[in-house]
Length: 493
Image 1: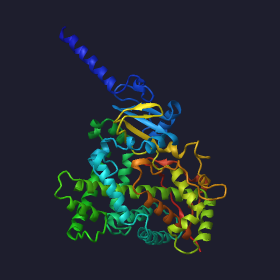
Image 2: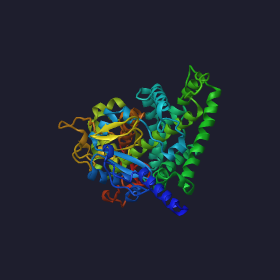
Image 3: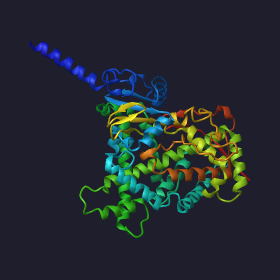
Image 4: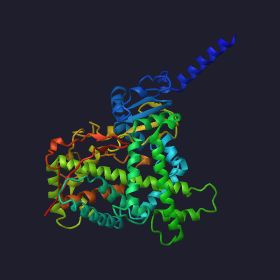
């Protein structure tokens, strides 16, 4: 053979290797889930709405069924959709679907530390610590309830200072919610105008918005393009600034650390760190502490404040529902401060809050999972190490589970007698081993902030804006957030 022939053969072999690696050939081998035929190297990327990929996944599920595959760059992805299938995977086969894949942007951010994007034994240790510590610092107990009620007072005073004029409530709601998780993490609260607090919230919001940008999605598919992307650099810069603040904080707390008087989650972590000093390859190192505090701050602020912002927009859109909630508040609570014990006596309000979560659908794609073992799902074979996307929007809007899946309809959670009715397909916090660690805290905050504000204020669109003018289509972000809007808060007598 001459050198030209060798070069041609080498190119052909390289091309065939790429085709194989990108799954260009039929997936039916080994009974792998079906899906659209990919292009070499880029896979199915060109057919995706990268701003709102969940829409593409919903369309594909109608064609290929509740378990299907797509090729995203070099990565083969299995998508699971519909209540029955997601439950079968995340709940019935929880251990097999409990791992988290390595996603470039989040590996850059956390290095596998913390709890949300952690892997293996490190994740198990950090999750156990998180659940135990959140409970110890009041999650689900009267101590944290008192803190929420106190914080509501600051929030209500700030809203009242607007004197009924149009204002954007998103930043002050964000701040109020943030102060609850800050009280657990750092053992303090911030004034809403504190410059450091404002900066921390801005960085968190900015990073969440940038993480949902199509260019960041492209980076996750083709990491070698990272040097071209400004968004990545901003997200990492925000991470570094946040970590620097936390390091100063835990440096200060270390000076006055008393294992018999732990003031915050950081104190509890530092005590564990000291206990582990003689251990090699321990888990309570500074890398885990920084990522854990960052994970819990972001999750504890974004999910609850986004849900509340959707809630008040929906109350503007449907004033008759707002009025019914206020009537129930008057009947059950009167002028007393709302408490968690009232929830069981307020089925309509409870149904409205649940329906806000279902309709808002703030995390349409669950954070990706990875199979920890070979598994069979709905007759398809999925090997260990496969990237899994649970399509939560297909659960929260599954027509087999919800009477009016695309409408805001609180009656989804009420029985024929008007009593509150739990629904198994209500999965806004995900399900299984990776379910949100702060679910109990989130439910407390949503109920107490929502009922307290509707007890004191009636919310209206600004003058000249009708209900029909209000836009319920979301803005582009990592999660589904409402577009900016203003409202008027009128004090109730």
